[in-house]
Length: 305
Image (cartoon, rainbow, N blue to C red; front, side, top):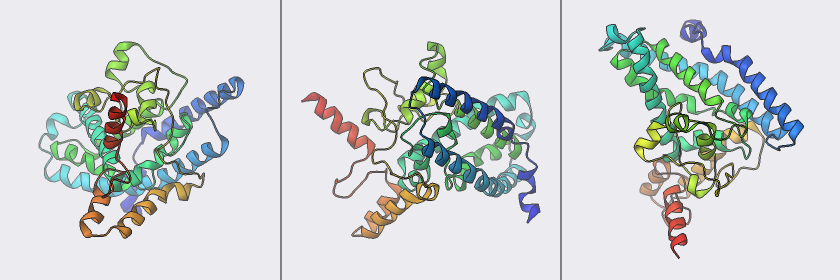
């Protein structure tokens, strides 16, 4: 059993070294919240975030171990450009963009495919937005998200190199979960994911739904039509369109899977059952519930009236 987990247990995960910085940053934000009475933190919600993060960290060891073996297989048997990419300066530069591009599509599809959303929605289920919410990670997403990085091993990036860059991206994203930082200089907002961009991503406002899927670079959202700037006239309302009223981490982890199962079970035919699983969240055969795209279209029609 140890041999299975050995590569990951011996992996010098940058996230582990960043944990003291995370805790310090949360402590500073908590102190400011207390002094200024901002209301950014809610005790039960923050504990739920920490519990979700702790559970995800343990399950991530299993997920990484499985995909480390998969990465290794493709890297060793294919790895078309090993000599040019493996542990070279050029390799790290290309990997920075390639990994972030992969994260964008993993994240975007996790919002657009219902069964993936059932795993990812945990991260959006808090009605608060602060650095502790960054720890509110999914317990089930770890079993599919690394599949989006397999192609990196095929072209010649070593598994440890891939996982290191994934961790660096995750560390960067932690600091986007704050209301303390408003808009950054225009050039930064143009290129990078920022707290302003990520506040939009965590909004339940119809205008903001399924926008700004960036990890480190916001350029992918700008390129593929999913960018939305934070607007002064549209204050962010955090959470999901139908919030789950619980701080129980187990219920948070399984809530949308339960709703998905209910919809699939009650569907009248196999075609609708499959659509419930793979169509966007909110899809329904009779239109009684709406997807984010349909809600935006309805909002646009209402504004024209």
